[in-house]
Image 1 (tube, rainbow, N blue to C red):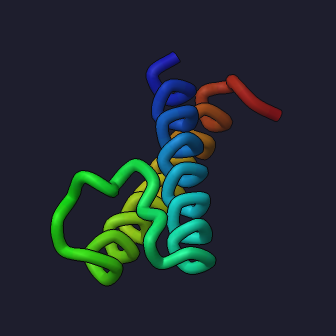
Image 2 (tube, helix red, strand yellow):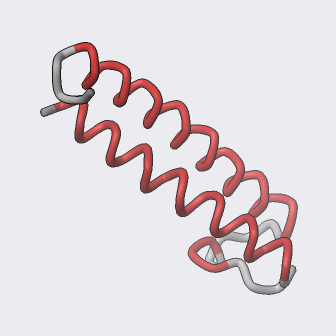
Length: 73
């Protein structure tokens, strides 16, 4: 069950990171969830990219572990 939770958290981070980065690239003034954070475009894009990469890594690890423990096909 723990690995499924890691998979879900990773998928959420991946989704939020990619969606935020795409929104920011389309409209440089629309920072979404990170609008409260100072620093501007470069900082926001870096944080969204970091969230996307971390989410992909977590989802991959959670998926592998869940599959290894018999929770997947």
